[in-house]
Image (tube, rainbow over all chains, first blue to last red; front, side):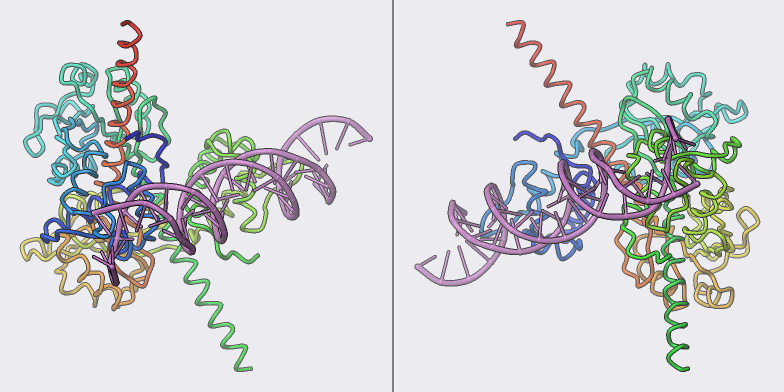
Length: 222
Length: 222
DNA sequence: TAGATTGTTAATCGATTAACAATC
DNA sequence: TAGATTGTTAATCGATTAACAATC
């Protein structure tokens, strides 16, 4: 059961599979199939089977996939059988929203602390999580074996904070700063403005298409 | 200058080009080249030229690309010469963070109002933006010709709210709810938990690799 | 002119889809 | 057994990369 060289495209489909199969489990569905999953997730049945078979095949000919088994296998593959400790750097809008977010349990993530550079915030809490000064970030990560660091601070200090976290042994970085940061550990970016711009691009294209249609219609009338 | 059938992969690189070229402009750099951009953005020079040439080629042999021209062309291509009006549905953690966010100007987006179902929030403001009751969402979109609707509410009502917005003529949806919503207009998803799970997958894989290395080392010692 | 770099065609690579034997 | 659906190999499609003539 060698699980190597999985393409980025496949990795990014895994959470969607897990989310969907979890829903099926909640509905008490017992079995599913590549065809059903493909229809529900707007994929191709072959693709679904190819994806699963990267990890060793946990279906049965003539039956399909058992929902409970599939769900557990997906969770195992994604490393979600153990818990991960996380710290948030930046107690601004995004940092605060993340600290208040109640959904991290689903990904087996525990928010341990928040760090900020403003002295007036130090000592306070958000959602019962303590706020420390960013000067203590490295020590805290080392002492508490923190796995994940969230960059939700200002862009000017993003790379600096990254370096501190890497030095202290962080294992992955979740980056909300609109900047490409450099690190020897996995980095996941949430680039909200880029997402927004993609949306605007598509809206704009629709507008152009409509304008063109309207023009053609006008020409017909001539 | 027909701009059609641009692949999703290219569309998703456009905001990064724009972000980088904007930075070059701020640094007062006058020219750049496909080779330089490729090195800076970790892409391939051919790819950069292919991407730009989908939109008609705005470089010059022997010279490269003028930063100002390139920046303006990218902004034009992405539809960022006009402004877009946005409403946020849901005044919870994420909705509040978005209402407070000061960076939307960059994407030419104006936050006009926030909607929530809680009566006690109606009449208040967040960052000087009024909060209305979600019952008024459709009328508000129609009357104010709102372009973009943000789903930052509870998952149970996400599809329902989507239908109301579509009915009222919304042109695009920015979805923060961990759910695949269905709409006849462009939908951009920010699925934070899925991003987190991808990060955890990669951290977990690194762990497996390390464990394996350690094992091999032990075997060597035997 | 010589050097540089584009625009564009051709080659390669990888991901998706189709097909089908294996088998529950 | 017959029907269903997997696991897996082969075919197709599309995206990335290489190559090079055009030209500034």
